[in-house]
Length: 121
Image (cartoon, rainbow, N blue to C red; front, side):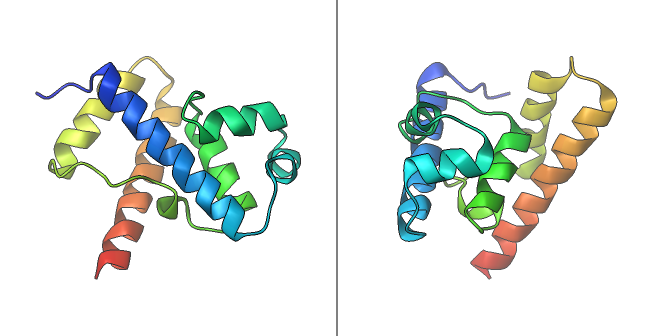
């Protein structure tokens, strides 16, 4: 099974942050404006956009809502690995959290994947 290394994670969060930044700018919103909408500090938004700050999934969805876009629009290109492998890797990372939280995460990821597939068609 493939493992995600630190370099891949840094790249992922840097691309995610870049997507947040470009969407925020397109919306005509400042970092301070986005921070106010989501309850972050401007510095936290800056760190997120630079890929230095990792965020929880529920905060990611909150950011997408504040930017009035579907969460899938903010995600960097997904791996070409089969969806099952991605979900299996995810399970390893969140196996310690309560089952209700795991269910929420898996439903959210499934919805994001479905949205992405629809956009690609």
